[in-house]
Amino acid sequence: MVTEAAGHGVDLIPIVVLLAAGVFAVPLFKRIGLGSVLGYLAAGLLLGPSVLGVIHEPEAVLSAAELGVVLFLFIIGLEMEPTRLWALRKQIFGLGVAQVLVCGALLTGVGILLGFAPAVAFVAGMGFVLTSTAIVMQILGERGELATDSGQKMVSVLLLEDLAIVPLLAIVALLGHSGGSDSFGTRLVSIAIALGAVLLLIFLGRRIMNPLFAALASTKQREVMTAAALLVVLGAALLFQLSGLSMAMGAFLAGVLLSTSTFRHQLEADVEPFRGILLGLFFLAVGMSLDLRIVADNWAIIALSVACYMLVKGIGIYAIARLLRSSHGEALERAVLMSQGGEFAFVLYTTATAAGIIDAPTNSIFTATVVISMVLTPFAIAGLRFVTPKTTQSMDGVDRVSNLRGRVLIIGFGRFGQIASQPLLAMHHSVSIIDNDTDMIRAASQIGFKVYYGDGTRLDILHAAGADNAEIILICVNDKASATRIAELVRDEFPLAKVMARAFDRGHAIELVKAGVEYQQRELFESSLILGGKAITLLGASQEEADQVVAGVRERDSQRFELQMVGGAQMAGRHLLLSNAVDQARESGVAVREEDIDEDAKEASSVGGAR
Image (cartoon, rainbow, N blue to C red; front, top):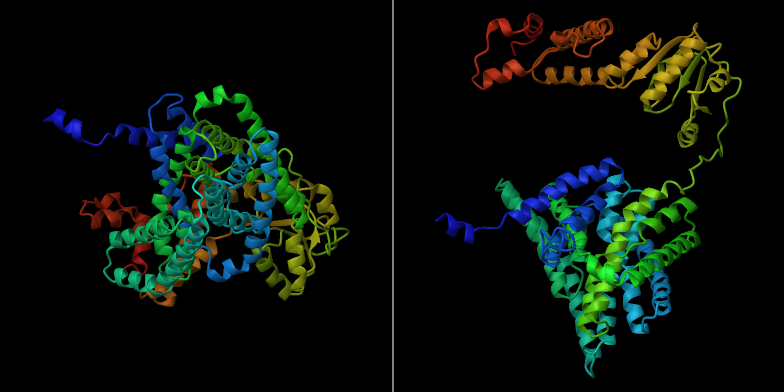
């Protein structure tokens, strides 16, 4: 019985090994600063046929894992409302087309110089032009740069490259042996089918999907909504695949069509777990696909191809970016981030092999070239910080601090400093303000404030800002270490000034008091108290009761802070914190002894607690 079950059961070893590889490799590589993508690639190489051989058929894993890219593009589409996508049309069809055509021509020329026939060089170059959507999107997502101007330009190019796979496949078919007398008519039919698929998906997205999700939501079955979300993504991908288009592009368009739906956030939450796992599996499969035997046998041509293709493609991207008025730093970053080949190159090379343009060994060499370029990308990005020029702030319209004489000095004019300034200005006190963010200074000037440029952590700047004569100095900077440093400088150099500071949390507040600050205010404390007080009034407490409870919480917090200052431990005064543990235990049916309930908690709960 056991033997039969073992013989017919699912082989869990590869699944467990793949999961373990991601769980251990990714945190390790992120900790040492190499990023999650390289962690997956390295783990895949280790598990693949070339090293340990735990996974013998990486192609099968890669086919399944491509769904990760599909789901990823769907989520990106959910963030791209049609109006926003329309706003990017010039970048998609301007910057994108320019980059594909210029880099394609350059890489085809490189292939010819490397000794390949023109048709083979074209296939190799155009395949390498198609940047890895998965790698670039993953890195931009981890950095939080998908919504930035620079990130949007890269996304636009990636979308155009996904579209470019369609005409490229058609060109490869025409170059190959499959082209015949009816090839032109066949191409027209293929184009018509592709356009029909796009129009059908647009119709379904506008007329069917939203009513469908509304009906499913009324059932209040979470698993049904999850299944429907996956059905939409995979259905759109399948429709485009059968029409000769990119699966990822189908999923992206489905996401765009649902981006204005009221169910957008629910769909994103349902798809996200599958996206993360499958995208990680995709990178693992790419690592497994690197055949070290082929690399060893053809190391010279592969090494030369990787170096030439990445260098020439990077130069082409940089030149286009600079011609279109991107800064040197932005152009350099885009060139490094997009200089690798991508997953759609594998599709193009496979099609070219089937069409007889390239043979199987050449396909393996081209594939290894692309995989190695993908592996090298995280290293190139890590090294980019050593050559990227440091950004300098523009001083246009900004005055440097010099000889200020205000009665009050405010250091840092973000949200906290702006609000803190209002009572002082209402009483007509003379207020000097400095900040080291030139964009903030220019924005403040537009609403009538005069803010000077200066770094409050520098003693000479504090002198120039008038700290010698200021009666009160308000430290409102948005950085814990800087706030503490300023407080220490003021304590040592301007002992007559009264110092007040913005604290981030309780630990930082203790630091500031020890640094000589006379009054500190945790940035969320009072606003949180007000919110909690409003909550208990909505639950039935009178305003008088709410004020009494809030005052009690404020007093208990003050007592706890004093105990922590004296005791020097974060846990000091813990008994003064109210907790929901006793109530939760009672609701769970757990017996609670009366003596275990803190006396202070009893007293506090009696104030308005009968409700």
